[in-house]
Image 1 (cartoon, rainbow, N blue to C red):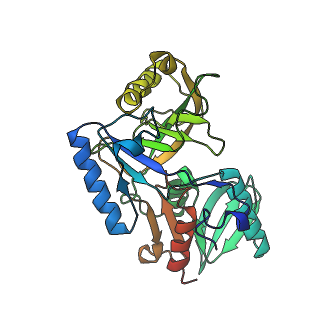
Image 2 (cartoon, rainbow, N blue to C red; image 1 turned 135 degrees about the vertical axis):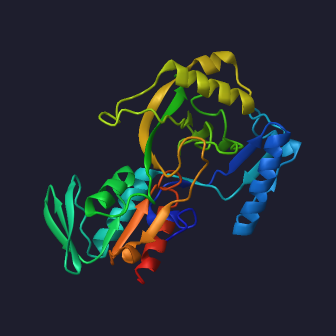
Length: 304
C-alpha cells in the first residue's frame, strides 16, 4: 500500500496539497515549548526549522515571537482518499458494506460472530476501527474497560462569512503553540484543497450523548475562538465578528479535561484472551492523516 500520498498522488488519484505547517509561539513560555517540540520532532526524524523575519513575512496575517515550520505537512481530500481505499479493497477481493451497523459481537470457538443490520458475519480476525464507537464494540464483546477510558468530546469549526477572507488569508496550516495539559491542539487556522480557510476545532466535554450530532454553536464558543485567534493572527475585529458556525463533530479522547494528550491505542487483544482481535481506540486527529500508517501497524500486529 502506498503510504506517502503526497509523493504518489498521481498514481493514487488522491488530491493532495503539500502546503507546510507553521507552529507559532507568542511569548517566552511558548518559545520554550516550541523548542521542546522541535527536539522531539528531531528525535522522530521529522524535519523542522525556525523561520527568520523575512520568511515569516510570507504570511503577513500571522503574528508571533517565533515560528517553527514543518515543511513536509500536506493536506488531503478525504473523499478522494476514501474512494482510493475503497478501490484498493475491491481490487484485492474485499467487500465494502456501507450502512452496516454492528448489533452484537460474540466469541464462537476460534472465530467471532458479528450480528449486523445486514446479517451475520463470521471471522477469525476482526479489526475494530469503528471511530468514536470503537470502545462500545469492544465493551460489547466483553473486553476490559478500565484501561480504555474513552471520552467523547464535541468539536466545532468556524468560518468567515462570505467575502471576508474565505480564501487568501493564509497559504498554509497555522497552529498556535499547544500549551501544557491542553485538551486539544488549540484553535488553529487551516485551509482545504481549494484554499478556503476555517478555524478550529474547539473542545467541549459537555455533549448530549442522546443527540451528539446536533450543531452546538453557542456564541460563547465563537467568542473563545476569536480570543484564541487574536494571539497569533493579525486580523480586524470586523473579520473576527464575521466568524460563523461551519460544522461540528464528535471525537474520542483517552484523556480527561486538562490531562494532556494521550496516544492512540493500537493493540492486539490476544493477551486479554481475544486472539485475532485488533483494537484501535481513541483515534482522533490526526487519525485520518495517519490512517495508512495505522493500517501498516495493524498489519504488523497480525504478521501480514
